Length: 359
Image (cartoon, rainbow, N blue to C red; front, top):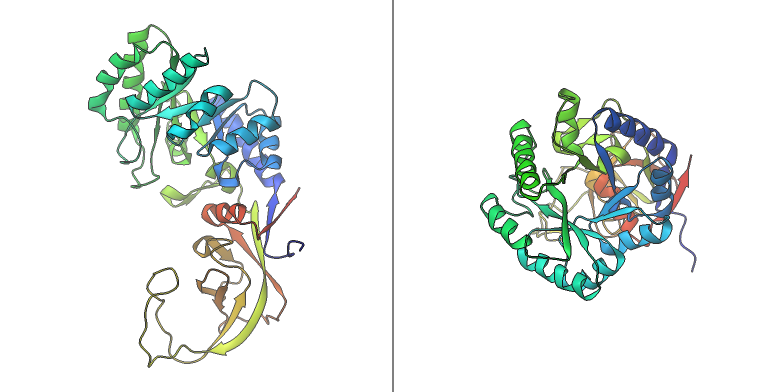
């Protein structure tokens, strides 16, 4: 059976291209090497190719499969970073394919070194540093010991150190954090007598360069959200020198009726174990769209009709309250939404959402 026309994810390559062009110009003026993070769009070929032809030569992803897709798509020489800590079962392929992993345990460094030795290769890697977000990374007190152990490994080479913020605990980068990272980098450079890379992620770091363009010691920045959406969600802001609207999700209305939940009955949790939304007294006109949690994230969808409110979503439906809307919606009509990161990621993951690119 052919894929249904809806739900549909439309990608405007023109918006993405203009954002990428501006970011490349700014990174050049800030002496930053840009790395495109491809996990938000599953390293889909049209977007990867677009970034490559604009001059991007470094790509990062949390999934090895996506990096291998990118490697097959692009010419040799592209730099590929595995930004999720590697699993043991991935080690052989990481070494064989020349993927540069981020690591935070000396045991993994040892495993990678052994595999590289078997294959007679020298594997580049990054040491992830914990900077306050309490996600992945060596703790500051582990750094000296890690350095002593790494000196004994003959088949790995530390390409650089890296840090990620505002992903788990919402900790935002500031000048103090950057100074500590730069100090770590300098101490390792002094130790080895060579330059290494300081790589930071993600979009939340941009604001530091916007305020102070002469930040020294940081070499590259890993970006996804800014390129694709023109937003910095961790700081709750729209980046005023970038565009939005590259991703639109469209869904068909499959029911329009006035309804009221039974207020007299006992209420439990919804199908996902979450508390239900507050009950509104009286019947309200609702429309149901064929777009559910399996297709997108309702919390990151925005409808142009401000009086059409998203009530909630089940696995296969999106429910909206249109009682106060002046628009006349009809069964079978298609409604469109501007989509944020979480909504787009889930749409790319869903085999039920058709993807269409245009300029």
